[in-house]
Image 1 (cartoon, rainbow, N blue to C red):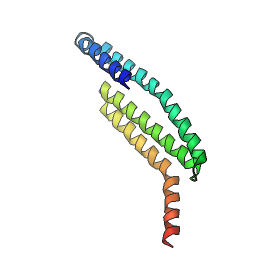
Image 2: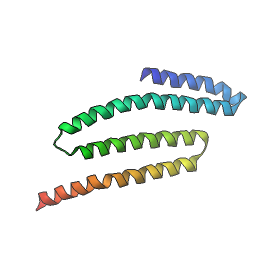
Image 3: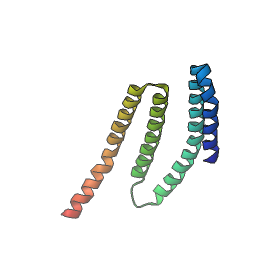
Length: 126
């Protein structure tokens, strides 16, 4: 994490002087930094998904639900990343629509879990 934070600070320190000279180069440098950090995190996320998938096979809960939760986590991360890039580029409306699409996707993906939860609660109350 320290490497990523240091890299982010270095990119900002390089982009700030560029912003006064050539604003488009400053924005491209910021986008490049975002891309580098994003793809460095993808490898770590794959490791997390592998560990959680292995644990899901040993849990009494269906592994389908654990995998669904992991996919929802990935969607949240990608949505937030995309929103931040759009906001940085000055496209607030696009960032808002990406956020809305992410929330609707997460809501749709959560329906099987909610349905199972309601079945469990119904059998518990009966």
